[in-house]
View 1 (cartoon, rainbow, N blue to C red):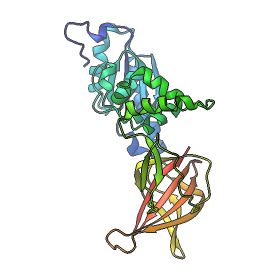
View 2: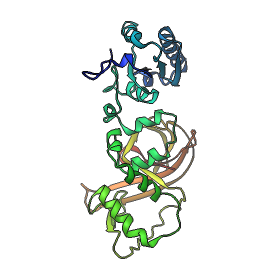
View 3: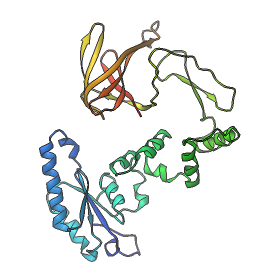
View 4: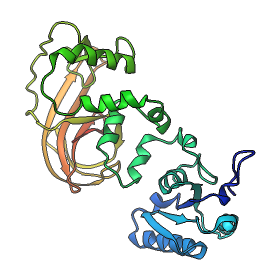
Amino acid sequence: MPSGNPGSAHPCELTPMFAALHIPDYPAVAASPERQGELLEQLVALGESLTPDLEITAADTVILDLSRLRGNADRVFESIASSGFEVWHAQAATPDLAHLAARHEGTQGRWIEPGDLAAVPLGMLRSLAMDIAPLALLEMWGLQTLGEFMALPRQALTEQSEWFGRQLPQPERWAETLAKLEALLGPGRVGVPVPGASHAADDFTVWLAAGPPVLAEARASRPACPVPLHRYRPPHEIAVAHEIRGRHPLPLALLTGPYPGEIIGLRGPYPSSGAWWEPAAAWQRLEWDIQVASRNLLRLVYQKPARWQLDGIYR
């Protein structure tokens, strides 16, 4: 049952008011379209039994507009609890707030204000119908929760967004830009990444951006790709269907992870190794650039003895 702040009007007496209903175990039936359809029908039926004003916002979530119910809204949540249908729910003054709150275990089951979503993972915004390009940019900055995003100064956020747009060269603003980045990220955390000498995937040093130009060593271990690679940190460990061809495994399909499916195109493998003179530190890896049936372009890595992982996605 929703609860308001002490000394304030009960949320059920306020308009507008929205509730979201979410099926928490929906991913467990992702492989069964029939079961997915049955669950969505049950969710819609539960929602329609409470109010005719509803909207399906995802395959596992519906939004109820309770603005007209006013004092009768408590009956809605009592009905949800007694329905026998395992469903998470949350209430808020806007549909998007309710949608996000109902999908996160720590915020479901109560009335939500914007500040209550601070612990919600930033990636949960992908469940909203929105342009995900800004979200990818925020994740690239290292933000992980909505609270970290809300803590950013709005003026700084606007200015930083402009830095990534295409502009005419303005050398006189370079020092100003570096100063703003250091103010956001901290002293010594802004620079130019330069590959290390070991050729390991994550071996690099950072040269101060304000210093002299750095000429990185050219490496021709793989064909150049004009599409940027968005690295996963840490990589996603996955299961891969494969067969042995000569000395190397040949990947055929991704069985788990964020992009399961048949591999319809690839180039590679591109082998690399290092520290072979130190048995405890020696490493070997094979890399492929692959395209799966969903048309996503990915970096796939195999490390002996039997470890597969996705290192990133080309965007």
